[in-house]
Each structure stands twice: as structure tokens, then as C-alpha cells.
Image (cartoon, rainbow, N blue to C red; front, side, top):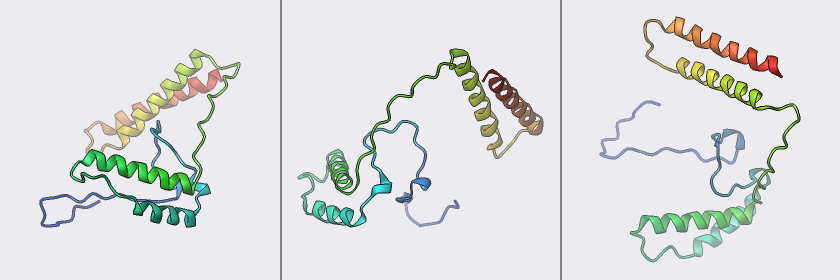
Length: 151
């Protein structure tokens, strides 16, 4: 994304809003409630947002935290009325063949893959970049082969 001259002392904040779950960023540990976007009732969402707009904002609009809390509660009530919440998934059942050794091999494989892919994302590379990339890739392949052999 290129920088655009705005002749202002402030920077723009850009964000995208979408109801398409495939375009949403992947979140590791969701904090707070989640809703089933596939079951969204758009008409009900519009009606709930109109009704919510009738509710008064906090008395002191100069307090940002109160305003943010009010907005969070307002959006939660609108979403609650327009779509059901996602149920928390039950803990995965352990399979009989899974062991700590397999878990550690899988974690080592994931770590090697992360090191390799993060190194490839570096824009300004050192002189020995090709050799280092090949070394990291080989480490990832070895870890993957080892973890697959144990399954």
C-alpha cells in the first residue's frame, strides 16, 4: 500500500468490513462472543440497528472508555438479534495413537515451517540468502519427514 500525501498532521486509519467469512482474518484465540455469519438475517439486522440508534449514548461523551463500552454493548445486542451465536466447540477427543512424542514432532515441524516462511518474507536479504533459505527449507523437509514417519 503506497503512502498518499494528505497535507494533514494525522494519519488515516483504514479497515475493511465484510460479512464474507473467507475474507476475515484468522484469529487464534477468539476473545468475546462470536456469531454465525452464515445465518445472518439482513432485514432483522437493519431493524435492530435502527432500534439501537434510538438508545441514548452515555451521558459523558468525553470519556472514551464509556463510549467504547456503550458501542460494544450496542453492537452485541444488534448482532444477537440478527444472528445466533456460535457454540463453543467441545474439547477434541484424544485418539488412542496420539502421544507426547508425536506432539513434539508436530510442533517442531510447524516451527521449522514458520522459520522458513518468515525468512522468505524478508525483503532485504543478506548475501548468503539463497544458501540460508535452502538450509531452512531442508530443515523443514527433514522435520516433516520425521513427523510423517511416526504417524
